[in-house]
Amino acid sequence: MPAQSLLLAPALLALAALVTWGLGLARLRVGREIGSIAAWLGLAAVAASWIAAGRSPVELSPGVPAGIPLDLRLDAVAFAFSLFILVPLALQFTFQTRNWQESGVAALAASAALVAVLSSSLVLTALGLGTAASLVMAQLRQEHPRGTEVYWAALMAAWLLLLWAGATLEAVSGTSGYGAVPVGSLQVPVFLLLAAAAVLCSGLLPWRTWVGEVWERPRLQAGTLALAILVPLGFYLLVRAYAIGAGHWPSPALNLALAALGTLTALAAGIRGQAARTRRGYLAEVLPLSAGLSLFALSLGTPLGVAAAVTGLAAGALVTALLPLLPDGPRADAWLGLAVVAGLPPGVVFAARLIGLEAGFEAGAVPGLLAIAAAGAWLLGFAGAARAIRLPSLGRGAEPGGSGPGTLLAAVAGLAGGALLGALLAYIAVPAAAEVVSFPVSAVGGGALAVQSASGSWPAVTLATPLLAILLVVALLTRPAWTAPNQEPEQSPAPLFRVPWSALSERAWARLAEVRLPADYRSLLDPALLESAASRPRPWLWAAIVAVLAFVVTR
Image 1 (cartoon, rainbow, N blue to C red):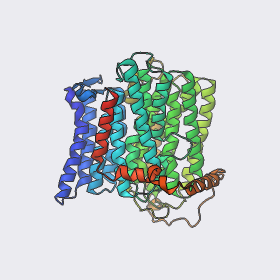
Image 2: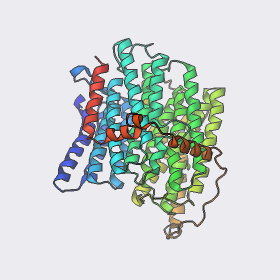
Image 3: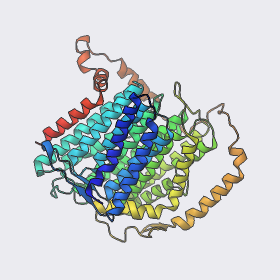
Image 4: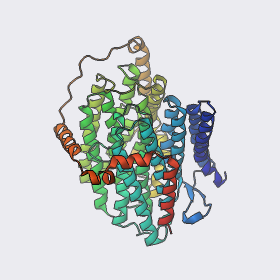
């Protein structure tokens, strides 16, 4: 297959955006259908390109116009992260309600995110990330202006930090290409810039970030789009950092620090989730908990840890697709979805987290202690899911949503993923890990039917398939009960424990909101005015600004 096939998936999504807008202006409102078709075709195009190349890297080098390197590369890492973006995007396009304007912006933002993943240099990744984040910000502001300040600050800071890191690598080594940077160029300051950009982009912090705040918006379409295309990009930077550093990050202390950060993020999300007041409040903490556990596994720096992190990101992509599709109310399909995202065995979420904990225990004493804390966060997630079944579905002013067929499809895929864990590792996770770290054959084995590591084994097909059959039989026998209409619970159950700092943080934010600048300086330093100015024009302006800055840092 020619190298030009790398452009097919981004081009399909960009073309879908143009066709959607053109038909919309002609009063033919079919944007969601066109976006759904483009997403599924893009997914098939990426898979076909990878298979046709014999699962070997494919490169496209159109040159360096205007000083900006536009080289694209489809390797095991790019293939995996393309799937992590396209799968939730396709499911959201298929089952989530969007008007034609929203569908066009969503398709264009996804196209930019795919370019960021397929790029072979840090500068082009920054260009794609900044464009995707700017397009999503414009859609967030058009959908509802509330609650976008944290998103705007985090993503713009991540973009600037990434440009800074790319400019530093260009100045030090003459290139920011992932495979061309000389060994030793990734020093601690550059890695800290990359890590900070990744943390802000993926919301990997112990307090509530933009990843959780998008669930407080009345509509979820724009916010869940941001989760689908931006959260994987932060992890993509950290995975590529292993490739830049020849299989290592600059210091083992950085590995330990990020592993601790991932564990704290998961613990804090689990604590907040089990004390949530509504079901959407719990859903806001599911993805931070999953991302924190993936960061813990990725930061171990071991072959099994990196493979477990990629597997966790695959499970997280399915969770990202499933969360906005969960129906409101105490319906049985919503209960099934909550069980899957919490890690019900033998689902892919359960299996991925189990492998991540195994990697932590194998990595040494301190990572083993962190693995125990990570297991505690997982248990808190179970407690939050059990309690969320009886919580009110929506907050004040929130619009109802969800899709029963979409929930069932994603939940069944999540459960079946446990049986297919061996294939997921063999064909996606292990090749991606081997692309960036030295991967001995003995690290993970078992083939497509089972998973074997030094600390244990998981007979995926022989154990998970009977469990799935038992679950199916139970579901069929109890079908009259779980299809009966249910009422919202009259009283919410009490959490395991109250979050001690929740009232303190609310009071602190209230005091901070009361602070006022003198009127003479208010227009210069008001973040709301800056954000409004950033999102009011058409997004093409900000895409052009990103391109100009990328040109400046590569001169």
